[in-house]
Amino acid sequence: MKIVSNKGIVIVGMCVIVLLISYFFFFGNSTSQMTKSIGMAGMVIEEKHHHIEPGQYFEMWVIGYNAYEKEENRERYKIFIEESMVYNLIEEGEEYMVSASSFREDEEFGYVYRLEQISNQEKYQLAGKGRIK
Image (cartoon, rainbow, N blue to C red):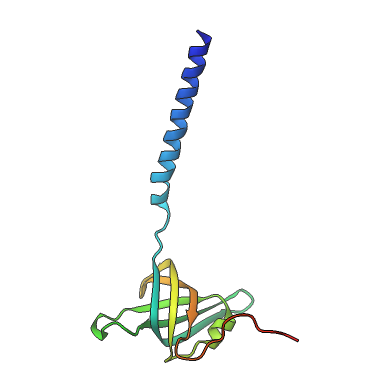
């Protein structure tokens, strides 16, 4: 008799665990913020901006559009940049290959993005490690 009750407890316990895992898998993700990713082979940088709060933080971002979209369908994107070295190398009016992911929404631009990768395809680029002597 004792063996049957132990098996029953184990089966009920396993069912509860499966139900909890299922709940967190299906419903746990619904409360998290959805992210959107973009990738463009040619993003034209229209504007560069930065904002400095002395002693607290500074923000850097660019605004641009997909060079290969028709002008009437053109959507502008706001992309924040974490590294000042990258920001300093970006030039207005130039075309870059860009990938970015959203991290919040903005009234003017809809989604606001965080820069993941940027590359200037127009100019010659080096690849690999250089030697330092």
